[in-house]
Amino acid sequence: MKTKDTSVTKKIAVVTSCLDDWGGSEELWGKSIPHLLKKNFHVTVYKPKINRNHREYISLAEKGVELVDLLPEVSLTTRVTNKSKDILQRGYQKLNLPGFSQHNDEPLTVHLKTCTPDLVIISQGINFDGLNFGYECAQLNIPYVIICQKAVDFYWPAPANRSFMITTLQQAKKCYFVSHHNHRLTEEQFGIRLPNAQVIFNPVKVSGKAISFPSINNGYKLACIGRLFLLDKGQDILMRILSEKKWKERPITISFVGTGPDEAGLREMASLLKISNVEFTGQVNDIENLWQHYHAFILPSRSEGLPLSMIEAMAAGRPVIVTKAGGNAEIVEEGITGFMGQANEESFGEAMENAWNKKDEWETMGKTASLKIAASIPTSPEKEFANYINELIHE
Image 1 (spheres, rainbow, N blue to C red):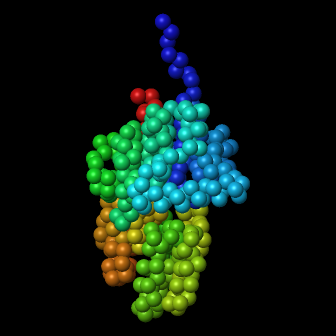
Image 2 (spheres, one colour):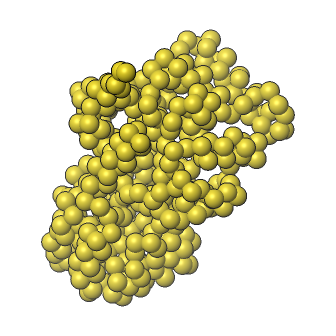
Image 3 (cartoon, rainbow, N blue to C red):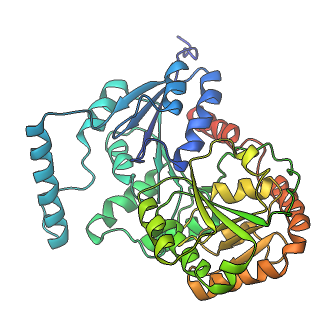
């Protein structure tokens, strides 16, 4: 009797729904890949369009990761044809007519049939924007897991897509969520329980040690770190609050750290409201160094998973001023490690006022926040995730 050959390299496919060159939702699988490679897995990454000049994808390619575009460059005729199909599909969906299916993703299907991975990791920006990929795996009897980086209270799945999405969630080997809030809201949105759900964490870019509190001789500096995308991050709420006379007169500066489609709009809003104590720094990669110059973190999010920028700020020893979006309230303790409000000018303005009144306590609160993160977040979430994947494949 022949024994099973266990030396054969196992194949893992990562399919990401992120349309940006590289998004925060990609940090988990991206940082887990080196650990998976050490376990002798062959890894292929699929994405609608890969920017091979981006440093993250350069690094992955150098490690031997195969990169595949699901939407490669095509001719003008093909683009026009595809656009026409997309318009028709949207029309059919609105009318609930048969004929077009949201979950048909032929390029991925062709690749999966060819390479037959042992497991597919579906990485989503929210909780259902990549379920079409998972459905294709289910149809091909290929095991898959789903990562849900965010769930939005005001953004629910289209009625015409609920059936295949529910099937996809239920048939996944695991549904990973970055907060209990996201897990609960997803179950509510689809009206099902997910016994295959598990809460995990994203990797952080700081050492985990509290960074010395900077001098306040030149006033207070707050970092608003996040994609400049108002629908999610709500920076316009902060702008309206900062337009109030009291905030213009206080020794405080807000730095918007990041890039995004709403940067021009925010700059113009600041000009219109004559807000001079804000600045736009663009993308900053050295987060450890950034926190040597800022006293607190602020982010008026309308929707979240569990913002990595908030976790990193707390780990670096800084108090946070945030909304109760996503899993924020699962980590932040009011008046102890930070301040919370709702995503509107009145409530978030109150949170900011409470924070300002306790600014003499920020350094102490930051130290407490750092200890909280050290006790709550694994040292290496990406390594833990790689271990979960390894266990699933070798069950």
